[in-house]
Structure formats: structure tokens, C-alpha cells
Image 1 (cartoon, one colour):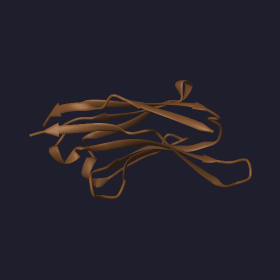
Image 2 (cartoon, helix red, strand yellow):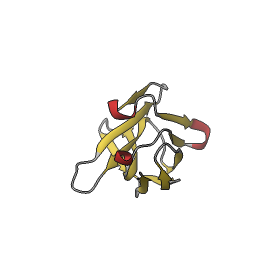
Image 3 (cartoon, one colour):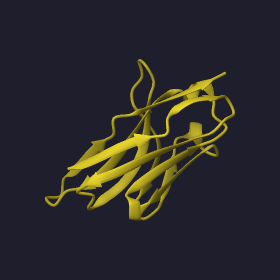
Image 4 (cartoon, helix red, strand yellow):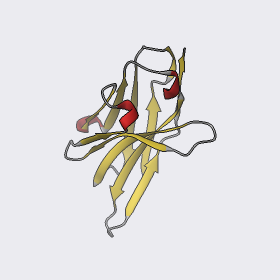
Length: 120
């Protein structure tokens, strides 16, 4: 089992910055990727940014140039640095870890979510 604990959410004014952190613990073997997803009320959870075990990154078009995902493998932690924030970034942000199990299946683990609110 993998446990993920997010931190760093809060209230920020438009144009401001926040950094989210997600610390992983437990059976952190064969983690293929870690990422951040956002979910607004009444909407489906959407991918914001993802980073693979090899360090490749991918972003939603809406955050390209504003958000940066990074990871510290030694600490099993992934970060999301959010800048130039907009009111539409307001959502609950969830950390995800995707693991390749010993039997070849994919296990998805989620954190509890952290609220990010951007005021106009």
C-alpha cells in the first residue's frame, strides 16, 4: 500500500503563487508516475500535471507556463509550484501515484486532497 499526504493548499489572490507538496510512504516501489489532479464542484477530476519515474513531465494546456511539477525521489515527494494563478484554478487538488504491481497490474493511489482557492 502507498499513502500520500498533501499539503500547501490555501487561499491566494489572483496572480499569486502556491506550492503544493505530496509526501509518499509505504510500498513506494515501481512507482511509474506521480501527478496532480484538480476537481471543481460538479466537474470530473482532471489531470493538471504528471511526472514519470524518468523525469518526463506533462501539463494540462490551461496550466502550461504557469505550473511546474517536480519530484524529490529521495523523499518520495512530488511538488506542484503554481504561479500566475487564476480564479479558475480554484479546486481541490489531489496527488496521485501510479504503481506497477508485482503481478503486472496498475495500482492508482490518491491523497486526501487539498483545497486551493484563488480570489479575484
